[in-house]
Image (cartoon, rainbow, N blue to C red; front, side):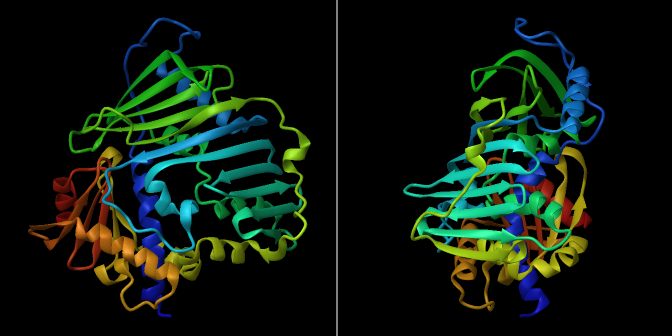
Length: 388
């Protein structure tokens, strides 16, 4: 397989994740502080104090806890075909509907994620030097082995076997690192999330070319752990993307949550982390060796809320043409085709192409082989195409 073909597969996996990353990473440094709102329920803190305290709490590390996270996306995408063999745990599935994730955290070496399905459950359990992936629909238990010196990397990356294992903490970390002068920040102390009193930081962009109206980040009033992130589009009253706890307990989970024994009759396998990631995310796996090369080729235009990512990719790569007939490749290619069918022609001094706009993200595929993605209007993408 050529580097260009593998790069195309890597790019197609990157697009859904990049869309969310552009939204979350669209905030730069030095906030404009608005007044505290609402009647006091928690001790009053300014946005500056709250940001500093939250950053300090993040450096101290997550406290033992357990809970249920609900992620909901309503981006206004056209109907997308299902990807064979990837179901609700694929990045594509995250682009619409609601998805539940159960989390148990007993420390860096005791972590469990459970992703319930319609008639199944996928679990990723880390307990010391034991890492298991349980897939009930296939009645399969996979033990992830680690070589000498690999345990730290295994623990850090094992959650990638569950593409939907996105928590409020993971998204909030990106937000808190990038609060900027192009952002108006306000804080309230009267929120309630998962039956817990919470502070809420609201980030609003000043640039009208951003499709994001506001991002709301709720922090637990006692622990300052992020409990919920909501992203609002300018065109909608309800969040276009939301991830938050529906229930949470800040106490050490029972030891049995991290103990796993394969059920009688289950198919038991052993594999490495690299092979597991390749199997669970085949498109990424086939192009994984080119990730650094792809990263070096991706550029950006603009900054803050109007940052636009520029990725070298052709329509043929995006739709998988000429790259084999594997079920995953064909499925991802079908999604690319479905998206492009909803695209509208666009042209400018930079040439011509096709543009897609959702509530939060716009994408421009140029005829000269560039994909521009950002939480901005199509006009802003066209402007960026002329600058890159």
